[in-house]
Length: 355
Ligand SMILES: NC(=O)c1ccc[n+]([C@@H]2O[C@H](COP(=O)([O-])OP(=O)(O)OC[C@H]3O[C@@H](n4cnc5c(N)ncnc54)[C@H](O)[C@@H]3O)[C@@H](O)[C@H]2O)c1
Image (cartoon, rainbow, N blue to C red):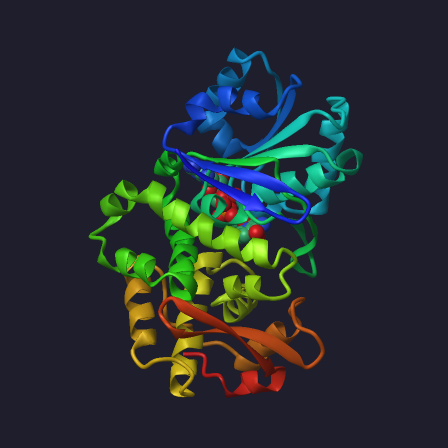
């Protein structure tokens, strides 16, 4: 089993990564949780695939479990569903010493984690992420949130789990599009911090190689995120490196009203576009954007931004919650494995070509 510990100023928590971990989840949780009551928040896809397995495993260790099942997908990350989830948790009469498990992708983790942060002013929760995005990104770092009509993740907080249990075997049932969606984030980790990871991904022959190495890959990505979160929990400094490709990516996602592209697809186009531009401005080693393009194509992700109204995208970008007044931070690469933060004037985005 791979283990990592996230060390924050006021909290420390473990991340466990092991194929087949779901089948010993009851035993593992017993080591860190002494009460009996557990509320599992999951979505209906995960419930169908793994609902019985997780329940039986927890019951074997004498836990009293209840499930709250939400609809799958981004539409569940809204106030209405949050309210329903909170009401169900209250009906279950959980107290502050009890436990919530979020069992699902990033949607379940973000929504369930946010509910846990508010219920009785904060109740412990454990993340068991099931999607690649969940396993390498959203379950670590404490960001929990819901969307509103004004944009994604605008209502939320920082609330870390008690532990994260990652079973890479669960990825075998993940739809291909979501797998490649997650691959965009894995590529991002390599691009900003780890040339070896990037090169390995570039060399793999296909999905089989990927799955043969998946435990190690997840460990590497979680290590990178953990280190950045430890240095900059509240996302005011180095943690911003994780936004590589995201500035333009978010603009594209929103422009197409979150319908045409997945998050990872939009980030892939954003990574290529920003790198091609920074290369042309002499800020990035020549050839870097070609490597980004090559790896993006390899993992079935788009690299070319479709024809768009540039001014509208820039308008969307300039209204991003992470910008302050006239300035914004963009993430660039010196070369593969070396990301850096550059502060620019928002007007400078006009010089960027949306390739
Ligand atoms: N908190 C953070 O730091 C952070 C970071 C990145 C992304 N996110 C959020 O994560 C969300 C995206 O995450 P996601 O892609 O996991 O979305 P998701 O939770 O909607 O999962 C994608 C789909 O895959 C299904 N699924 C998940 N695991 C499966 C499995 N093992 N087998 C079969 N089907 C499975 C789900 O039911 C869903 O239909 C977004 O809301 C995004 O804002 C948060």
